[in-house]
Length: 295
Length: 244
Image (cartoon, rainbow over all chains, first blue to last red; front, side, top):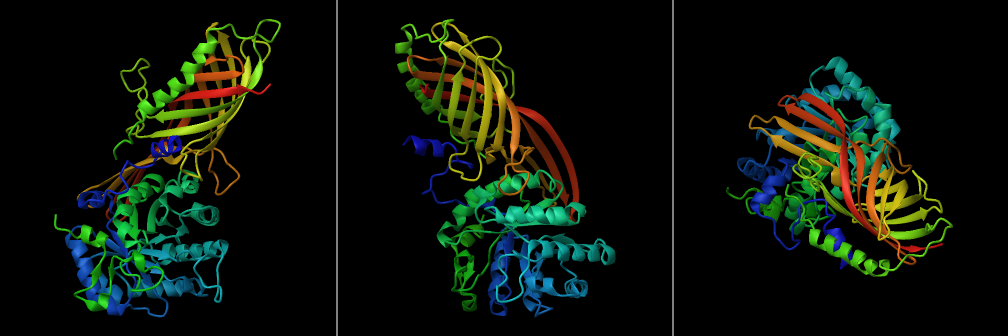
């Protein structure tokens, strides 16, 4: 019992009963109005409906969408952009292997004049399939430096770049961010670059603190992926864990991963909506219902 | 953010449990080991510590404001410590201690602190007053990190991030990830028979960063950074057993 008492009074957030369901107000207070959206043409009507509902409720300012290498002009991105939400363009990891990435950036900028924030790759050292080309953080630093130099030289003021997302817990992400800082970020203008972190475990981000308070002190931080796999725990996660992301990482934005992660598969539990082809009768998660509740 | 509930009653009860049994044997004259009548020895101690940002709020006897951007921190720590009372009690050093303290008990990654202390104990017969100081090093708890964010109607985002400055490196993970700071401690101690009981307060002198950011629409960023030393106190209670 003593140990339980110690842990209880040692909690990092405000005390809440695990059984207390989050209220609309609690979720709204903690929510960050940003969501990741996977590009899938079948989902366009449901996306438009769901994103519009979030927007009407004041719960959506922007989305993060992947700019895929095999599809330069993505109609889903254009459709989502027409709703008036800000788009963070995630430059596909496979672009990073392009020997002429500068020209690729020129084409992307031309195709998406409405996008201002571009994230150059995502979790590049961990999610690339081992069967294909892979990348170390040192190789990534060289590519990021090339993109940065090209944008500043040929598109000054056009875009803000985000780093690839470091893994948000454990030692790998912080160590790689330290390497990226020493090889590239320390020589870049912090007004033109934002540090990105993916964090699904906000209580274990202590290894970032020294970097964010040291060499990365002038840089902004966005959490570009976060969330909980169990739909029944999504709202509690927002209420209890989003504040920790802001508190520990000074995260200016937190993007929920993701609006729809497929109707099946390992990530489907993150979805705010499912079965979008059933529009208008698609499934909505409890979190989505709370976020779009009439105020 | 609301302040975590303070288990003051539990803390006081624990302290009473520690101190009351000790007062009984303390009524008898303690054994004296050294020729000068001083009782020397090395003790293994277990301890509890309780931290809260407003232990000494404004208007208290110390007139010290515990305000740390709302002073919204509270945590409990456990510690293990080895205290050595030297055979001689001459001023200023009559003993020393090394300790490991685990802050943020539920976190594996953070809140691991090692310290070294030198102290002098003034024997007042019934108990002793210990005055000491030293340095502490380790990976601090995240409990002290705070961020307050405000979003204006025009989309301007303002936030202040307050946190202990990592001025040292612990050879695990990214760098810098550690902290090194001095502290002072004042306590009351009794050493009845082979036991040791101690209750006191420590004040850590930790350098904090106070970082303000303002991001206007269009990504215009203003920054204002400040840092200053903050006195961070905590109460502690230890029980120990004489090893030799």
